[in-house]
Image (cartoon, rainbow, N blue to C red):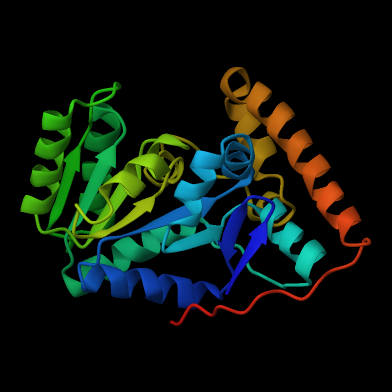
Length: 259
């Protein structure tokens, strides 16, 4: 089921259905991509209609942040669970290890990817087929982009984990659909958390929608402006949407995502 939360059409589905859908796309080498949406992505889509098109063209858009989960309940009465990148990433790696799937990590620094390789060797020792590439922090020329596509496809990947940050990773995945023969997932900040470069908020903060505050304490200089602006704009836009509905939930659309 896909329902619009402001500018983003979110996939409303139980976690196992979303997970199984991504795994199936990976097993089939389907050229598909998944956006893992939070408030930052939603506000980027609100400000940039072109980016909204990119996100909504994804095969699946999961509600990562708890504010999006609450927004779905407020506007549609949907009791949707959070489907976070920090949960999908290790679960998909476990499945890849079990089923001998090939994974490719695209993005991040060389140091991060070296730490990722060490982490996978320790925690997923049977995951044999893993590859990495840290692209330059600039726009690639067409010839360079074609070389990257060939490099990734040469490994015959099932899953491509993209760690470029929002909105760059979503735009890259959209541009690669039909060119890279794998299921691409924009994991953003989930990778440094998984490998221990950053800490994840305690469960009670996750459930209370305060994970952003935990991250803000860790990186105040980089994140203060983003959270101060995006959280405020999100709350205002959500209030306006709710007011237009007469301060009540309306019936959602039906477009079920199969498991």
